[in-house]
Image (cartoon, rainbow, N blue to C red; front, top):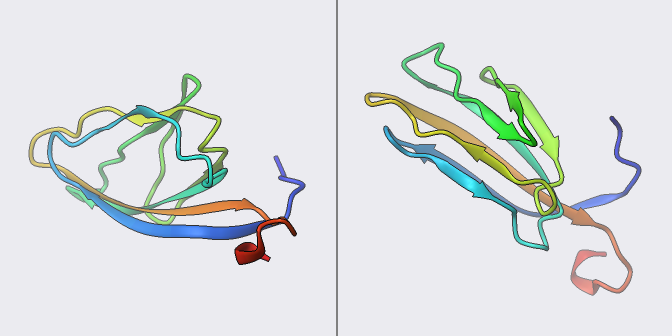
Length: 104
């Protein structure tokens, strides 16, 4: 589904999750209206660590991404099994607005 809004970036960060690491169900901070999560892969190679939102599971292969409204949609990941790790990059965006002078 296409988003009919003009977006500007708010931040980007990479995360290395280590064995037993997890992403507890949460909403993103308000200035991060839209998130793009990109999977860079996992160890052991080929392991897919699902991202869940609204009961739907997203199985991202390395290089795959999912775009979602992070401040409105709770998202989570179950704990990684022992001996596993996963690398993700998260890009945050918000709507472009004339009132937000630092984002014009």
